[in-house]
Amino acid sequence: MKKTLTSLLLVLTLCLGIFAMAGCGTKEMPNFTMPEGGFDVNAPVTITFYHTMGENLSTVLDYYIKDFNELYPNITIEHSQVGGYDDVRDQISTEITVQNQPNIAYCYPDHVALYNLANAVVTLDQFIDSDLEITLADGTKVPMGLTDEQKADFITGYYEEGRQFGDGKMYTLPLSKSTEVLYYNKTFFEANNLTVPTTWEELEDVCAKIKAIDKNSIPLGYDSEANWFITMCEQMGSPYTSNDENNHFLFDNETNHEFVAKFREWYQKGYVTTQEILGSYTSGLFTTTAKDKVKSYMSIGSSAGATHQRPAADKKGNYPFEVGIAPIPQIDAENPKAISQGPSLCIMQSADPQEVIASWLFMKFLTTNVNFQAEFSEASGYVPVIKSVENDEYYANFLSKADGGKQIAALSAKVCIEQVDSYYTSPAFNGSSEARDQVGALMQKCFTADAGGDVMAMIKKAFADAVAECEYKS
Image (cartoon, rainbow, N blue to C red; front, side, top):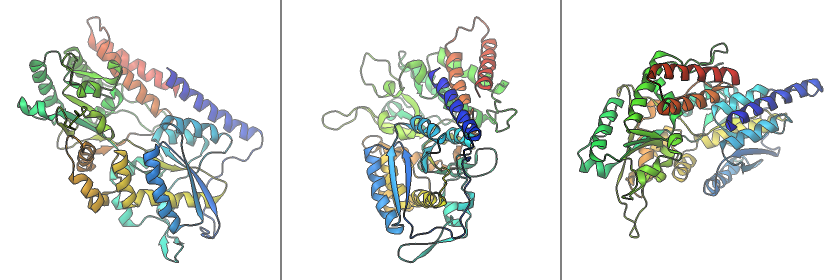
């Protein structure tokens, strides 16, 4: 409820701010227009960058800012950590109303949709496809835009996220990404001759076998109900949401009712729990080794959280069991689908076109620089957004050490990279985050509610209520 109220207040703040600007005769937020002279490499310009990086990642960023300044000594980068992702969104939403927003920001698609209520985000197509040249400090001329090789180097699913806003325009570039993966107790699986599941049917069978071996266990923990729901829609080719302004919320349909009913059966049999139902991350069940605690032997969670899916080592540095990592189960293993997560970058409108161009140059540097992408990936647990990092000696050495213990982050990255053709994104619009919240809450409700003898009637009502909430709050 608190999250919903926050979202409503943000929308109201933006709308009131836009109305006030118009009513007071204040100029509306300017759209970016490329100046005739292009970018002035001799004029000092300062750009601000909001992100969520802690000290270790900020150290990596600072190192590469020095490299960037060797190319563009006239551009000063001022960056700051603004709490978590929602904190970045909240602060920028407030600052937009007084036209004091940063130049670049970490973002998720629904953040961009919110900012665009005030037309606050610069579209990137004019930069990506630009045939202008920039003169570097040493006199070298380089393209302002992306070369064909650079465009092709982006992992397609990550890159296309920037176009999920209904108008075909590019609003973001990916910085670093993650997905969901299946963590499993490899030691337990091998000892009990269990096969790692590749489909949901196989997963159900494995859960039944684990329950027979350890009747007190909850075989599977799934952290995000919302991700589970949205991923099933994608895997089954079933509607979830749309950018159609008159029909955003499409998830109330028979196909979706049926998979929720199936997974309710799993929950009722004790096969699965989720973060919201458990009240904490399900990795706690997966990593526990206490004999008197309920255990799970599989966990579906973020690939970036691999170190949290590893049990504590003993005093000699040995782990009580080895963790295996695999792609999440599929409806069709030949046509896999996995969610794309993690921060992208957007550029905010500015009255000074030199700031906008400088922001683009810095964005391009971070997203296409192989060395930065490699080092940032190792430090963050996220994976690079460009394919060429795989050929980087530094990163190849990192991946070569992958194992289910000390180097579990490298193992997680390897699994992510191996399924680069699986990633999907959902439509982004003002209200898309509400849809996500509602389907997550719907899963929890349908798993735990007393159906009163008519499970499908309860599920259908839960779906109808969720759509009504989305329409009311969007």
